[in-house]
Length: 172
Picture 1 (cartoon, helix red, strand yellow):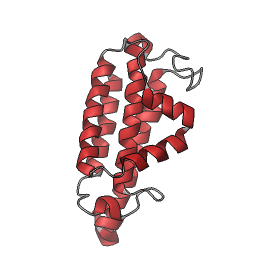
Picture 2 (cartoon, rainbow, N blue to C red):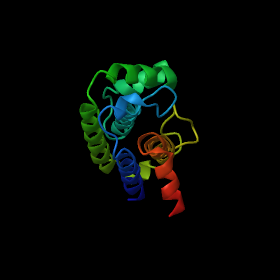
Picture 3 (cartoon, rainbow, N blue to C red):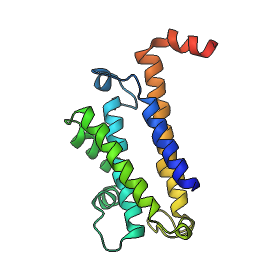
Picture 4 (cartoon, one colour):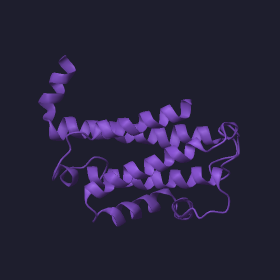
C-alpha cells in the first residue's frame, strides 16, 4: 500500500534526522523558534497521537478521541504549545519510546482501514469537505514529519557538527 510506505518513510526520515543528537544537545539549542530538539520531538509525538485518533475514527465508531478533540477545540497553536510544555519535564528517552509506540499503533490501525475510504472527499469534515484521509496523511503526517526532519538536519549540521562539517558535506 502506497500510504503505508509513505508513512513509514516519513517516520524513518525523522529517526535518521535525529541521529547523533545526544545529552544536553536535546535541550540546549533551538531547532524551531524557541523549541529545542526535545520540544520538537514532544510536538511530533503529540501530533502522532492526534493522527492515531483520526485513524481510529475510521475503524471504530463512538470512541474517545481526546487528542484530536483538544487540537480542534483549542486550535493548533495553543494545543501544540500546551502539549510541548506538558511533555517537557519527561526524559527524551520516554518521548522517543512514546513516538515509536504510537507510530506502531498508527501503522496497525492503518491496516484496518478499508482502502476505499482513503480517498473519499469529505470524510474528515473538520479538515475540509474537499479533502480525504489520504490528503490528510500526505500533508499533516508525512509532510509535517519531513518539515521537522529537515529542521533537525540543519540543527545537526550547523549546531552539533558545525558549519565546517556542513561545508565538507557540500563539497563531496
